[in-house]
Image 1 (cartoon, rainbow, N blue to C red):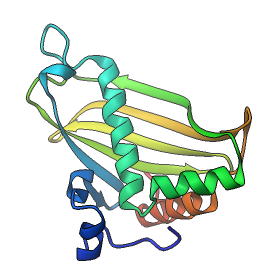
Image 2: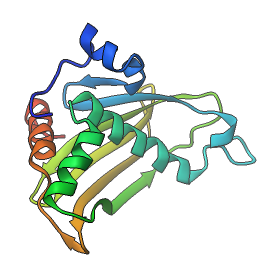
Image 3: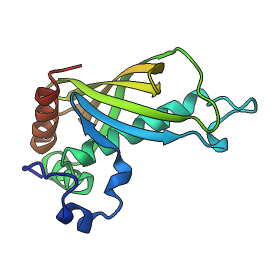
Image 4: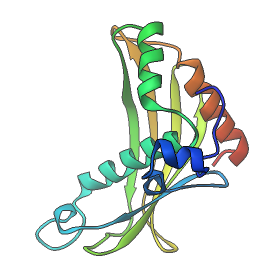
Length: 169
């Protein structure tokens, strides 16, 4: 996990033949396409507000996957460094600008904007083509036994590299 593998090499696909479902790394971050299904909408066919949080969580997870952070290995490392650890959403700011509807294809853009001692702050945007639908800022903290702890080194290194490659958000 210390070296960032190229995500779409033959070796990577042997390890995970569904890696293409994780979106793509772009300058400044990651983009995950998401189709809106009936289950994502309310009775009027508009995406239910809480489902944007699910889309954004998936994008954060797939961003990690594509920058070389294997979450199972990360959890093992974190357990060794800080028994009883958890990653928690510390804060989230969201602005709902326009609604998405059933059958829309959305893109969830994720970009790291700060890597601190015990937290990572990410900017996320939900787009329909060039149209901004939802924008947010998410701070994720690493805690153990009820207290903030230093982020595991492998995650810190991968996120700092992603931040430096993108030049921030």
